[in-house]
Length: 438
Image (tube, rainbow, N blue to C red; front, side, top):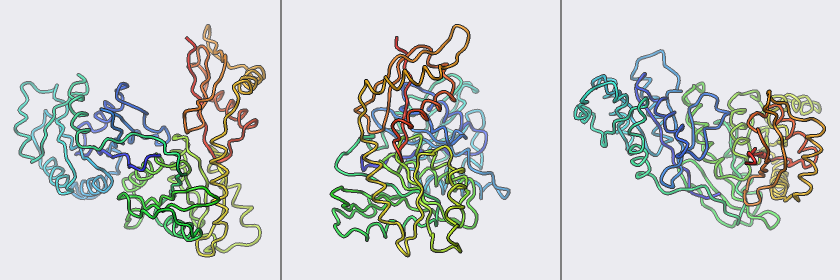
């Protein structure tokens, strides 16, 4: 992928000013959106948008946890997390309520971040002859009025956002494989990054610290250039709280977007963690390759049967990505580290395979004949033919037919399972696009 990081725009503000409504209004603009927010986040807080030929991640910080302590503590946590991850901050307020002390505190903390800040006065439809001048006292320019119900002001908002962002589009570079090392803080990402880098002596390029969140190192393995990307962990004081957890996922999104293949590190002493599953879901949604890497294998008490006992448990936790290989490693003893390179090359080769259209359609006919898709009255889905998208770096297949929108999700899952029995695509997500023939 392009080595440029996709910028991040965060929406912050006190409660009930319409942060989520602003987020949904932008994400819901079909002419502006490249891809909806990954369904695996489930809580509608992250989406990737495009405007004026620029891509960016949009984050609704309304998803952050509500602290039981003072308002100021809550907002400081919210703004500090947003400032740490975001390139542009939107401060949301509401037009029918004059600036409150809470709004002033949000604005002050946002400006203190030294990031570009935009003030949005939402719900402008609720007041007549709104005085935007009163909002200048917050010290933020520009001040932009919006109305979600009347769908006004969002073109100006998007224009202003994109003026502050670099022109970044997702594009594929074919000169090397890009491998992102993902995971929660303190699971051993940097240790694995360093061990993988030292394992190969032929260094092509060393670009540590190319971005704020990613360290990079390019090595050569079996005549293939592999760029390793170590996603930086985040500081945490005690438990991972919801807001911190969210921004950890957000940082992973940018790395996933760049990568061809992702290594998801699982701490051997703490395996069943929802955040690990969420990150794996993001990799699947993005159509990337995935390897599940159990780290710190040297640090736990085990016997000859421990691995065989843990592997089925891990497979059950990650049942939604049954195609992802599992490997147990130690950066200290270097156990199985070289095997990671071999898996990466195998997955890259699998992702690059081209299947003849005649073979694909032979499979489609056999699959549909064995188990025809169910439908509704007068709405029977029919699948006519399938072709591979040869210009897409993600293994993707277009299935043309009629009434395809009535295909049940379970039938799509059946199709993928049948497809992988014929072409395993081990270690890689695949995509089916269902298109109406007419």
